[in-house]
Image 1 (cartoon, helix red, strand yellow):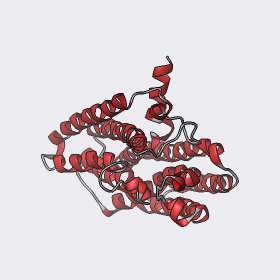
Image 2 (tube, rainbow, N blue to C red; image 1 turned 45 degrees about the vertical axis):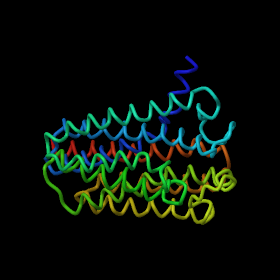
Image 3 (cartoon, rainbow, N blue to C red; image 1 turned 180 degrees about the vertical axis):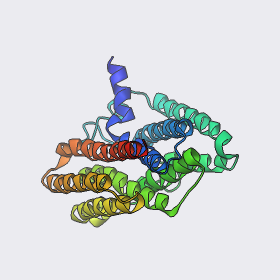
Image 4 (cartoon, rainbow, N blue to C red; image 1 turned 90 degrees about the vertical axis):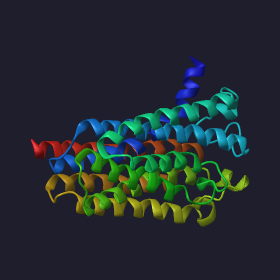
Length: 292
């Protein structure tokens, strides 16, 4: 049971809404345009979740190998660092999960063609490049940018295209909105770990720009995302209300984060992720109701 709990912790359930939200937002857009094909959308969802889990496993494994994690860290407990999961087991789990994701990704070829293979390879490499390689993105202040690309721009645009067979510039706006919101999850993570990351030479934005600047970006991301969602979805009371509620809660979260330190920020990580997920679900429900 303890071993199972350690693996669940390694999956990082509280951050999985990051991969789900982009796909669900694309489904909401497709539904609002009366063009949602549910099967490829669900395959995109499975691929996205597995790719994020593989990235989470890789992050734990490669940060341990690089000596960047310490026992008793302020963030969520890491089984490899604490000695509960062997490095070999985590490495194998990383590539096994990524392999299953790639198999699911290959099934999407039937919906759009072989050109999806280089896209899948790019995503798989991105899942690893976040934590390892000659220039680990998360170690050089590019974690937020990587998240915007791989959890916002790519999943929203490609899910929409695969689920509807079409595309428009509104989809790009929505993908940027999701990217802004999801990158806030990494911002909270790096905001919390700024001191520990500085000690081991990890140059996140929180380390190089400081916590105040990072918190200002967190706030700005939510504001920009709210505006872009309202632009990308058809004008209506429901979308306006959804994003007004999100923005109000986002501002309250920003004020709360500003008052917290260390492990007290861990719940803010999950709340940020859940809030994004709630927005995507609300948009999908609204779109389905309007389409009915």
